[in-house]
Amino acid sequence: MSSSLEGQLAWVTGGGSGIGLAGAIELARAGCRVVISGRDANKLEAALATARGAGVHGDAISAMPLDVADKVCVQRVAQEIHSAHGPVSILVNSAGINFPKRYWSETDGETFDKVVAVNLSGATYCTLAVIHGMRGLGYGTVINVASFVGWYLSHLTGPAYTATKAAMVALSHSFNIEEGVHGLRATALCPGEVATPILKSRPVAPSADDLARMLQEEDLGRTIRFIAELPRHVCINELVISPVFNRLYLGGKEFQRR
Image (cartoon, rainbow, N blue to C red; front, side, top):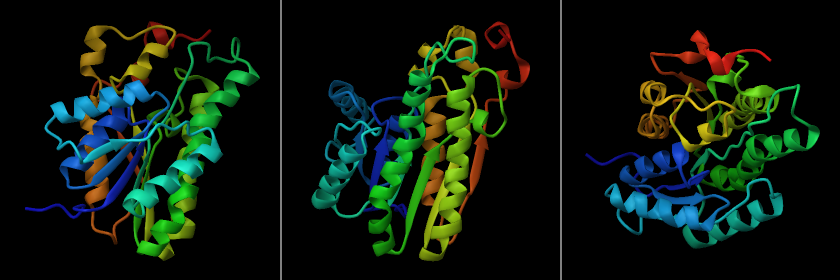
């Protein structure tokens, strides 16, 4: 049975690894033409090899390097994608960063700005770059990879990350308020802990046992595909997903207050 996504164009930022790459692979399996973007060209090439190893046909996914924090670069890359493939109908804003020195007692304004530039401004720039093409199509899906900590406030991730992920939830609702009348929809995807490379930036890395009990990249890949494949009259405004063993509720040594 063919997917409703057959022939659509998806653009996935933060597509070099983690949730972004998992989502890109699932969208390609559903019949999308997928473009992945990220800052590291070598990482993107490795991601393409991973996708091929997962059985994705070689021309189903391509890569275009991009720093989402650079709004001029975002516009240029978006235009190149449009010129090569047509309008984007699915945008997955998965690019995100955090830093080990993240808490009020040790962070600084420069670090805060870097997190905001990627996590929030980058998602905004990419959405602005594709919205008119989506309006022309009369449909479009924006999936903003927010976080459980943007929905259920937690100490673990620090003020910059927490604030930007909460803002992505608001960004998604704002999009639906204005663009639903044009057939466009946005979902704030709020996952709990996912075993992805970004966990290496934590002050205390989770144990192997805890990583195994977290959500896995493939879980989020399937979730992204599920959201995108829903009928066009359906909008999931927020989707909150967490591991059964939810450490954000339970706490632990890396959650201790400073």
